[in-house]
Length: 125
Image (cartoon, rainbow, N blue to C red; front, side, top):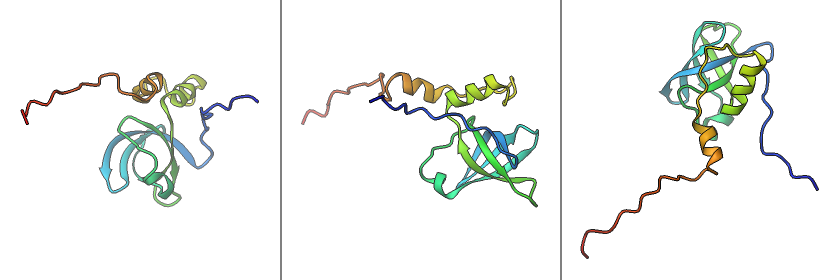
């Protein structure tokens, strides 16, 4: 039996969606993102993603555009660093976008922290 890969295939943006890079987190499930069409939008993290997916500044996300509110959008999907790099290679993202390398480093290390420090108990008790 062949082993299944845990890697996701990068999802391309459908018609009413746009790629964006997170500029800052505003709290309460909201963030400010710079969309690839040049517009800065206030985005809301959708219900299923809100407590399951951790979104940081600098992450590449897929946002669904709203019909009558051009300055607002909904975060649909967060791309991992390797997915964002493949989107950049396909030409879906501009060349001037920097992709965060934080989760790629964690994958290489197996998710464990190599900088583990063991502090001695100096309380004397």
